[in-house]
Length: 112
Image (cartoon, rainbow, N blue to C red; front, side):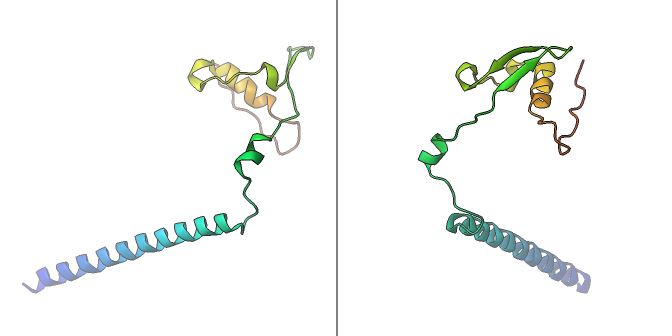
C-alpha cells in the first residue's frame, strides 16, 4: 500500500511540474505578444504601409555563358504555387536571389 501512495504522489508531482511548465510557456508567449504589440522590437507597419512596399530589384535571367536573357519586374511576374513549378526552377530562383555577398550560401543541387 505504501508503494501505491508513493506512485500517486510522484504522479501528482510530475503533473504539477507539467502544469507549471505549460503555464510558464503560456505566460512567455503572452509576454512576447504584448512586447511586439507595444513596439519593444520596433514599430509594426499598418496595412497601408504594407501595401506601399515595393521591391525595386528586378529578377535577371542569364544563360550558362553569362548572356542576359531577360529582366523581370513586378509588372511581369505572377504567383505560382510551389507544386506548379519544377524543382530545378525553384533551385534556380533561390540561387538567383543570391546577391553574391559572402553571406550567400550555396544552393543544394536538386537535379533528379
